[in-house]
Image (cartoon, rainbow, N blue to C red):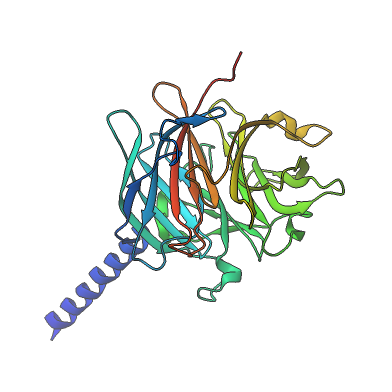
Length: 339
């Protein structure tokens, strides 16, 4: 009897350990990747503005929870990625490249339900994750910040240590950002090397019609948020923000109309301009319409490769509306400004 009890206890312990490991790394899912032409009507087009196309993939999966990707962060070496969905899921995997360095495939994809500060199942109000950034300070390296809409808040996840099983430490969103419309809140987060966090809303505007954002103190630090504004034009709204290797910011913007479909724009903004007296405008790096291989582009990540080139990764949110919309992952090289 004692042996039976001991065996049962060991089996339970092993089962619990296996479940904990699965929770940390997620469940494996099959995802196919189809290579894309940058400009299907003219395959000779290799870039636009100041971005050169370095490969694109249309991603598909029979897993019903795959889709709705709203944020992505790619590791500094470009080998792995972590993404979030607006249904409150983590997605991770490995990126593969051809001999020419172009993005060629995706492997080892895993998915898991994101833990939140509420215990109400899959309530959209609690699970609407819209923005993602990795922290850069030594104390928090490997941790991720997730911005949520509807119930506006920021969650700090110690992802490097706990993986997909991480529980968040909640950071309140200060006014006026916390007063954003329910479905137009923290669309972009970007962590600076000194620990401060840049937060940008989708549709919260100042009296002049500019987009409102704020520079938040580092997680756990005291201090007031400093608000700023970004110029707004051409029906574009912010969808993500990434820190470039040299310290500037890259803003991803999106527009949509029934007549012209979706559009995507990239704007480079000097970080110091956010602390100026007027709205920051920046430089339009590239603007793409439906003639290019784009969809509802929502997530942006940036890194430098071994040769010092700046690479951008842009991912789309298909709104769980396949096959009408697609999950697309594009890679670009940021090219030098003309002299």
